[in-house]
Amino acid sequence: MIRLTTALLIPLVVLAAPAQALTLSVGTGAGCDYPTLHDAFVAIRTQPGEHHIHIRTENYATPNGTGYVPAVAQSGVFLEGGYAECTDAAPNNDPGAPVPVFNAAGGAATHALDLWLDGLVGTFQLRRMQITGGDAFNGSDERNNVGGGLMVRGPASVLLGRGLVIQGNGAGRGGGVGLVGGPVNTGSTVAKVDLYITEGAQIMNNSAAAEGGGIYCGGATELGQPSVKRHGTIVLVDGIIGFNQASTGGGFHCYGSVEGGGGFQPRPSAGSAALVIGNQSHAQACGAGNATLDASLPTDAEGYRKLGAADGSNGLLAIVNNTGIHPGLCLSGSYLLGTNNRPRGPSRFRLQNLYVGGQRGEGVNGLFLSDGLQLRVQPSGRTTTCEFFNPLKSCVTFENNAYEAQSGTPLVAASLISDWGLTTAADIELVRATLRDNTAYIALLTQSGGMMKIQSSIFTDNTVLPRTGDTAGTGLFTAHNDGKIRIEHTTIVMDTPLDRFVQLYDSGSAVARASIFSSSVAPAPVSVSVGSGALPSQFSREWCGFFQNASDFASHTQVSDPTSGSFTVLPPSALQLDPVTHAPGPDLVDRCTPSVTHDYHGAEFGSLSYYPTDPPADIGAVENRDDVIFENGLES
Image (tube, rainbow, N blue to C red; front, top):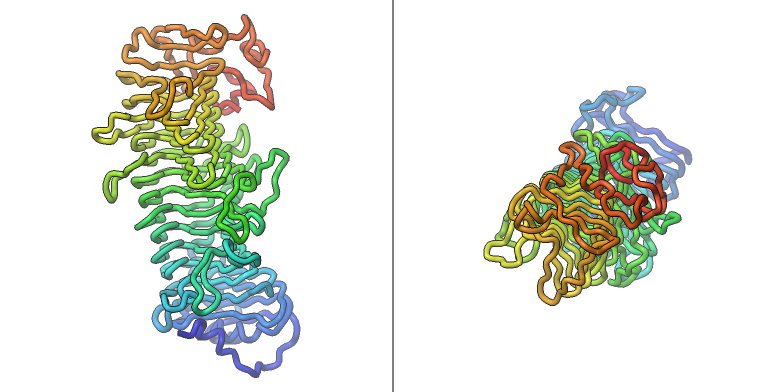
């Protein structure tokens, strides 16, 4: 099979052209320079400089695909569709305006558009055009089995901008887009491809037989070689990766190395959403996507690599309505270049502003972390609200995600968040998050091998379903295999049945500090229970905590006091949480005192003091007062 049937048919003799930047037009109307994009590519391939190709709005049948192989270094190539006529001075920029369509249906099984950039083009940008009909399904030649709609060979920087749509393409891997850099697990050449999705560009309704329905970072470069993981970065700024399907990584499948970077890099711009929506994994896992995070980013003073919205920005990474066995976003640590090792340390990230909603599946519905990744999820600012969907009090929100059986009863917990050390432990921190109206199976959050830290967050209206005949029962948090859970200044309100708040197995442990654990249904859950190999001493309470934790609500509403180490029994009326803010009532506010008048930071109760290096010392995530600590209803 010929790998690139049009790009390689470049004539040996090319008409002379000036060695300067060119602006050309493509179309069949009056004043057009060339009838096809292939002809325009031939004209610019030997010319240095910055080239602009204006494309008349019409349908272009490209059954054998179109390719570009530059012969000289070029600063940029810009494909601009949306011109009603080639003689127009500017394209039609109106939303919904017609765009040229490049349809590769029929003909050879190949990519609709194949860019052999190989480090020669500074930036390649596409706007106002549709790429469809690509069918890179050629199992006998792995080079031609990746990237149905768009194939990019690196090193390269490609931008998908305003009005660009890649849809209705298919491939063995990377139904919409294939990014081919240097191999991740073998060799030492990085040659990374950076793909920027911005200005509302869309990669939608594509499919892959294996990995990466929307985007796949990998492939083969030589005949007879297998498809392997390759360096690529998906920089999602303002656009949609949506309604794509694959065996695993419905939205995307992209890995990178510690030394070379690569993977997923969400950077939502102010007032917009980087949207991963409606993707499906139909055989294995990771409906939203399966990726590392880009380890080539610099670290800040705290040792984090920063992703997500800029400080104070309301831009939002939104993971919405994805489905599959594990419909959530699967993230893991980067590989050491040329190996299969993924160490702890280099993959330490801070992700600002995250919304996860409407996910459905029988596995992990929200976030699935593994293999050395250390992730802190937090709002971009103490007073920032995110309003892409309904106004969110917290810019970190998990809501309306639910377990749904698909292929039978799962063998393990189908959690909202799972932190799983498959080979190397992973960690997650949630800061000022809201988790509401989620349904999980056996446990809401699970930790194995690493640290799960919940700070200043609110849990309301979540449901945990039991496994039929399982005596272990249901819990909000589960830790095992040396997993550690730490819950600080968090308010948890259960309105549905629950057996226990915390379930520990073998070497798992948990700590609760200054938090509210409450239930409004009888029998109330116990604070903690231990499974095989665990001991009650593996659960501890620090400073102050409120637990409603026994079958008799009338006499077992309890507060642990750090001074005496004992529990105070309060009446049920002590649980007087504000119906809007879930703030504790006067029986609970500042009840636990290491001294007569001061909290454990030494501040007077009721003062407005703020401690930037320590969390405030009050119970729960919110309180019935409005000051600098509790701005916007959430504790800082």
